[in-house]
Image (cartoon, rainbow, N blue to C red):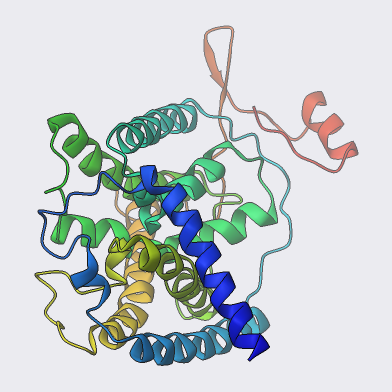
Length: 322
């Protein structure tokens, strides 16, 4: 009885908190079908949600443990200066796009939509563009490659009905387009931005487990009290071919297949374009970093092993190619 009382008190506290944060979701367009409201929130029964969440939690534990036991990272390679103009341009441009997106969300009182996975993936990409090369960067890069289902689904099933301003709609497409351009550019740079062999599924399984946990633990926890259909965790989309009481079960299955397939296909195509296709080929192997040439006395000059600057770098355990 004491436990039930505490649970009831906790639920009431959470609901009161969401009432106070009503400004973050009060602007959600209720005229869009299955976007917000009690009808969407009650699409599945509470018992069904509990059972599915428990099953998803078990699957999360299995996939994350399985992935962590098998993932490997390459040994830290000599540092290569990758502070390139293109990298800075993408960082600034994506930052502006995300900043405008956040501004529109605040002005329209739909801040809760910033929790959607594509915005989280965008933040990850901003970190990858800004961070110094490291094994952490490599790990996050490999994980985020398994989240490219977001841009694909955004273009196949665009959800722009609630975006009333043209610029807001344009940002939707620009952001999701950049989410594909950025990982390709980072693969082109190489170095810390490298991928595992195509036959290695450990990173894909780990990423799937983390993605599943985010949906059932985070998105669902915010979507239910606010009655906002975050990434369709409350009810299926109107165009969902798997509409019905089992739509989340089917989503768990088809995303388990789609995410790794998209990741491996993206890596395969990028490898072909960057290492084999004559028009776009820039290096012999995908993991090799692009080493910049140095302009000296108006002549194109490539550093040699005997250069004093490289020699100093080796004495410190790093190789700098400017």
